[in-house]
Image (cartoon, rainbow over all chains, first blue to last red; front, side):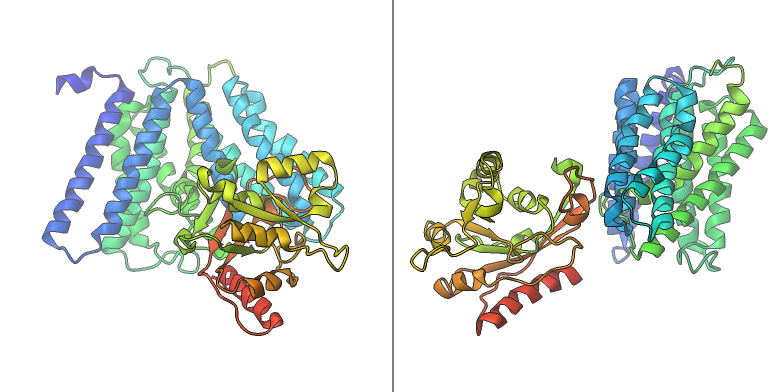
Length: 317
Length: 189
């Protein structure tokens, strides 16, 4: 096993993820052999999609920084588009929506030129103030507040929130550790997605008591707690990607586990409100881009700011 | 463009294999014709003709040039000029040469996304060509992406839902209703 230790930490994590995917695929294929009447096809479909997503994500990470940033901009674009499509928007919002979409390249441009000050206030301050004015100009006041809120909320979650992942890519090595922005991003994404998977597995296998039946009928207490505990274990396992000490891994993994769950149920509530089951059918077995990015909308900004506060405090922002 | 808008086409297999046929669809945006053309492979585009009113699409040389060049429109007169001229003659010609026609019987773009009343032009064609299948198509969300009166498109996901071919029978008004109802059913799904 010497060769695996000789890789850089991000590559090492990549090898482990591919190993996990191989393992998952083999387990499902074996279960399908043993119990052919089970619903293994959907699971297999999901794992296939995981292969696709992991592949795309790794390609985005190992290619140069600009391509990675464009990749995340595209994720934001797609997520925001799915969000805005299922909502009722007014005819009068057309121009405002056009500007809202235009914020995506601009926000990622701030990421690209590494301008943290602008990156962090552009959507919460400037766009927040600008879009309502654009909507006032179309002179339609009925449904005004509902409409401004929807657009701003979508921008905050899917453009501002998700762009924190891309900004992590800018971050250099943490002093006195092998960890850098890339490895931290990998830690965040792997933990968030595995948290989703484990909450699903625990809930499916042992879950009984529903946690939020009116919002998301499949979420159970066992799924939630089992998922969070497993995520903490996974966090310890992937600690080599981070500069965290043991106490910090515990805290960060707990935050990712709990907030990932929160993102999941918040997006479920959005879907309930709009009356759809999935945001789209982009990813076979999973639903839309948003059905996969929902937890990251919550975990990405929280993780970013924890890391920034504790590990990049001496960094010149 | 298509990546940007994100077009979703449902039940493409409902399109007849044999030409000619007539696609009848609701109308809410300039994206409608583009989207319907997009479901055909490039080498068939010569034989797919969106039917367009000459008073609108040939109102100046520029619009006319663009619509003919890019969309290959088949323009017809909406007003009957004299008793002897047949405004539908170009359509008959096109059907005789096995082309696909794209028809928007509302005659104008809907502002609200609702489906308006159908004009009777299509029925005159059906009377002459009872064997040509009518393919009802519902276009969803186009009016949100590019509404009437706007020139900047916003990327909503748009839908093209293709229905089973029809051969409307009976009175003129009932034929129109059969077509309109089939589009409403596609929408309701």
